[in-house]
Length: 177
Image (tube, rainbow, N blue to C red; front, side):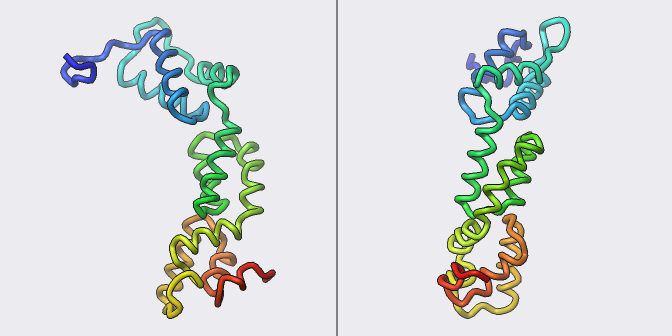
């Protein structure tokens, strides 16, 4: 029978298989302590526990962080830079880091660099989505509102979104407002 056969139940986890599962997950994915603990909790719920007292998943995730298998700071920095290169703003990056379980103080440090590059990220998004000076010159007011709304959903402020959508050309975006 195949290993993933739905008719054959998986054996419950013990401390060794839980550690192996955590190691396999940390090796395959860039993750945070919170995500690792949530993954292990899900696996524990799916398969059950063969040991006596239930394991301390947060302690195991902290142990992996101390060993260097999981690095919340590197994850936050990498995720923020990646999202900034794709054109997302600081608010959207903050939400993604919060969902990944990054602590508030680490999020604040990471978001400082994202806020410094806010205009550059907004220009990247506008160019990719063909907003403002990067799209059709004849935009009506409904299209303008939709473009501004899309930029706000991407995490940019209203002033930045309006500045980009209303810009007559790309060169005017690089001038001081």
